Length: 115
Length: 116
Image 1 (cartoon, each protein chain N blue to C red):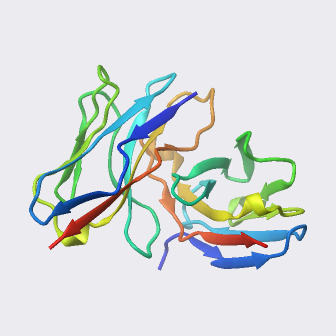
Image 2: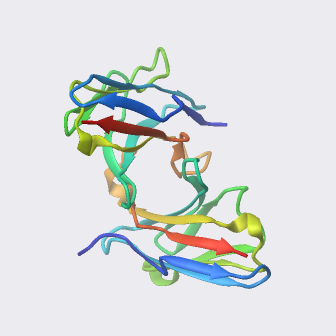
Image 3: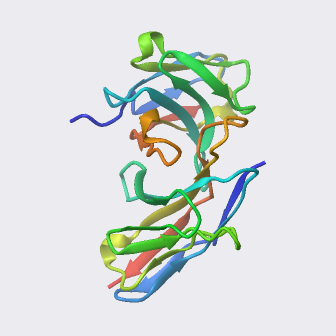
């Protein structure tokens, strides 16, 4: 079945540091890929997405590129802020109707940014 | 506000009792999803509706779980004869199928269930 693997957390960085959160996936078809973020006390919200190979999703200074050859969708940000502290989830959604149409999520990576 | 809403936000029940959760999606969204999230894990898909039709159910959804979406609007998720293992956050999300393969699912705040 489909699966998403993310780097374990917590990840602790200083403000203005460079961020990478690794995400790799296994899928039977050709999925769309997503990063969701959950800020403290809030619900899940979409951060960015990509629907085909080599597409780059970007939002709020975060970027991720859909790499089909390495089955990866790593999240990056050049300079993190304290307000980026949150839990980040990588997820995929299959295109075909053969399986469940829900999102398949990774376990999440807790990011802590220290001032 | 036109976001996804869920009620109640918290529910404490005793083992063996039945519980029902409600989800109100974004009004123009025709797809509605239910997920379950336990501590330290990502959300796990339970089931989804397109309009009023329940199109997919995960193997996680045992016979004690039932979901409905009458008239394609709000949805309810009922758990019968609750067990301690049902303690989790239950999330609802909605989306527009017309967005295509990359459709964005908008999540509600969740209902946290504790079974004593």
